Image 1: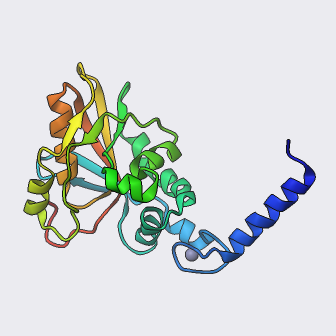
Image 2: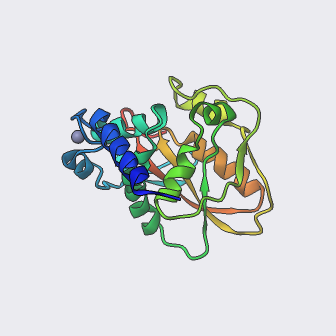
Length: 215
Ligand SMILES: [Zn+2]
């Protein structure tokens, strides 16, 4: 039973929490995300393709305020940021029209799940008001993709995913938080296609800016 005292206590705690908070985008104190940085999370759709040619739409470019916010969500447990970031994801998810498709998150490795206590793509999908279908899982261990070039990334994730059930032609859209070369999307597509799903598109919250061409 909640009493007025409880609610006042809760109010004080939230106030203390906000006072200790800094904007995820620019470190301005007293807010989780200031108005200017919230504005910087307006979708700016980036269209790309994976090495295998799957079309990818990303809501944001992984730089500046967007990169800061995604790092705080992924690395510092600031799950409240999933709401504004999920709103950006929703805009591109809703623009990939197709009727009875399922939204399939790229799987989170066990070690990443243990470290964070949540799955970033799944959380973003929920905050985008969609239902994640956890069809994919990671087989064994893959090394961290960071620091690997495009070819090494593709080799690293090849054969790394497995699908839990038969697809029977169900149309799916794959979702990840950040797309770099697209090798992860290609591996997800391989596993889903082998299980009988039809992958129509891939959507990411953000794409790392290209330096020497995508892939
Ligand atoms: Zn800010």
